[in-house]
Amino acid sequence: MSTSSAPSAQRAIGTVAIRWHGSSLELLDQRLLPAEEHWITLEGASGVAQCISDMVVRGAPAIGISAAYGVALAARHAGGGDWQAEIRQAIRELAASRPTAVNLFWALQIMEAEFHGCHSLDEAVKRLAAKAVQIHREDLAANLAMADHALEFIAAETPFSVLTHCNTGALATGGYGTALGVIRRLHEQKLLNRVYADETRPWLQGSRLTAWELARDGIPVTLNADGAAAAILARGDVKWVVVGADRITANGDVANKIGTYSLAVLARHHRVGFMVVAPSSTVDMSLATGEDIPIEEREGSEVRQIRGVPIAPEGVQVFNPVFDVTPASLIDAIVTERGVVHNPNITGMRALFG
Image (tube, rainbow, N blue to C red; front, side, top):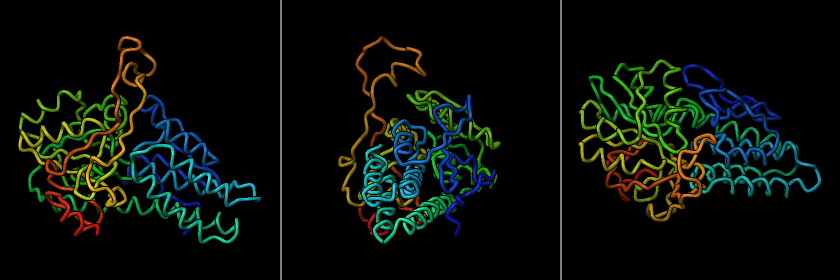
């Protein structure tokens, strides 16, 4: 495997947002979409950590992949003196960039284990780059497998509509997508009528990213305000709400973008299926329930403003959690590349994940 060859940008896997060049990493600045497609070139781990913190790159799988490349960059640009200390510091800096998405820590643990087996800087450069590329490629393969598992579980014969929240497509992963990967596969199999995409306040990932990504790939999408979800579900044409995840606990509780919990409540009331799609790297069996998940809160200007334009009184108090926790009791299926946990609970989770 080439250490400089990450998955290519093919239409079949969507718009790739992460490009690896061996000595540098390019990230598509998702803060500027859809108005501008701007790539940021990074040559060190500090820059990657800052991009993760600033949400240049977002989506749990994409964060993990980017962090892995950040460790590879740390090795490539280490000073050569105490190169081991430089790489360890890079891993710590990347780990501190965001607290909730477990994929970040999963990828860093893999990279750290690979690093511990290296006896020279040259060896570290080669092995860490190869491992990061492997993580990237395996994420794409996992997304394709999840789409297969989800369609087998849904077992639909006639087309239907779905509703989704935030962005879980190629932009948020190594390609194809998690929840949007399932939606892509439904479209490919002519089983999709329409996607309803929540706008997803306050960062508007649904309107800026999901609507853009689906429209770009010719998948029928209708954008809606978050508050319109109940009215859409009440009409009866949506059969599944399909979302991603940033962390899944041992009992099947799921942390995902703020607003997911309310969608699960609405889906249960309207007898609509609720499906979570995420790679097994998102599963954290060390946490018993969702109460144990650290929930990131960001500063209030993200809610008081949109791209610097005030939309609320200056200085008003803001509650701005990035994620909420959906109880397993409201989830019909958790889909990973390993298979499906139906009506998740600790027994089903242990059967699949140990």
